Image (cartoon, rainbow, N blue to C red; front, side, top):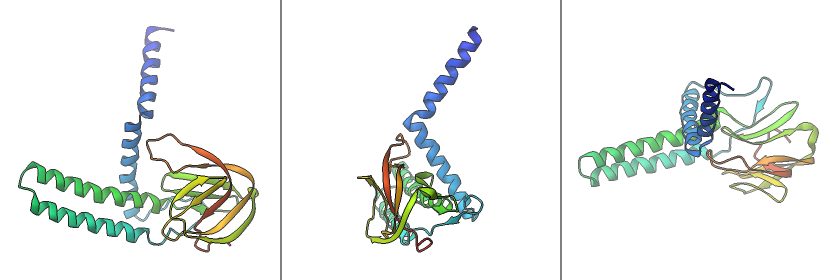
Length: 205
């Protein structure tokens, strides 16, 4: 191998390692959120052709709106308490960033809803895909109301909870790998599951 090829190979490996670094992955994820926010304001929805979206969990927008109001109140209080100068400006910038970031998170969910078509059921939250289920694997689907508020994987079951809980249970012929709810900068972790609970909003029965 020539010296030039060796250098190119070394640079490629370094760039690959950098892309896998948690800080770089988090930065790329955040940048993608702001792009999603822009797409949401333009009314864009990312769905495969022929797929039908599941409704979003009711109450999530209200929670984000309440969080925004809290930040705005905090912003006013900080503005009154802090003296003029760099510290007040920094607090203002952090508050504005917090508002934009939380709405970017919800935008990522809104433009990438869970969906189903004739071949599969895909359950996701924003860029995170929790389960991609082939319809051939579904042995039974039944109404099953729960008040689960969290996303949990364990004991052979995936539960995609939220403000409205879950309303359907899919039982599978064979287990699939379901993703755990991890942070964007963490590596993907999966567990085998043969039962899946989520909120369908009555789209499938």
